[in-house]
Length: 281
Image 1 (cartoon, rainbow, N blue to C red):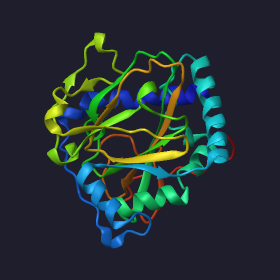
Image 2: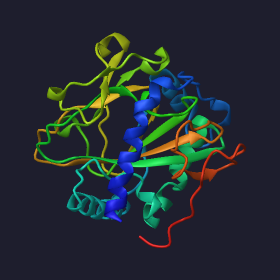
Image 3: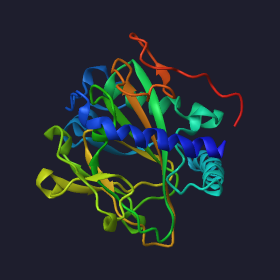
Image 4: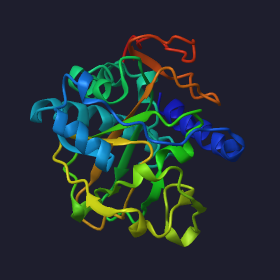
């Protein structure tokens, strides 16, 4: 299983080479408070204005401890197979527990309020910064990396460990999701960036906000939001699990549909593979 999880990241990285050739609509679509059932009208307003919501409750201490143990096992297997702490990608394909996690009612409720009733979860990715890890995730917009015809994805960022400024928590630029597609440049080796591209001069796009979360809490952000995170100079690990939920009516322009699971509503155009629930962990 670990080897398969490690191989999956290569499939997604190689797809980036053709991004500049794709015809994509990169813009933010505001959520409507009229249909909200889980979030409040004030939270919807905050999301539309800032591009991010936090902290939101998700799992209690016992629940997140169990999820953390499971992810720790996946990380151990992937790293033993030659990967690193960022190499757990799409574990739901073979892990029943990760598959079921995507359907957690509170998480789905947050997503439904923001993008509607037809929802697909097309990917999970574990972002784990080990103690004294000097890698950073440089400033970027998620939609810049993703081969979809429209930017209609929201990310649930689940804190498996406490995340704060000391151990390299995520940061975002409030309101930057309203600026459309922002120019990215190829990152330089000395920047020690976990990603291939970055954005300069982010201060011009808005106010920088820290995403401090306790284990078991989540943040939710738009795929158009500028965000990133610095190194982890502390003695503590900082591990988070991202879950990417999209409007199922958006068309995929590469092969990222293969591991996408329908969460609720309909796939009216047959865009997504919707693989079955794994039989075991």
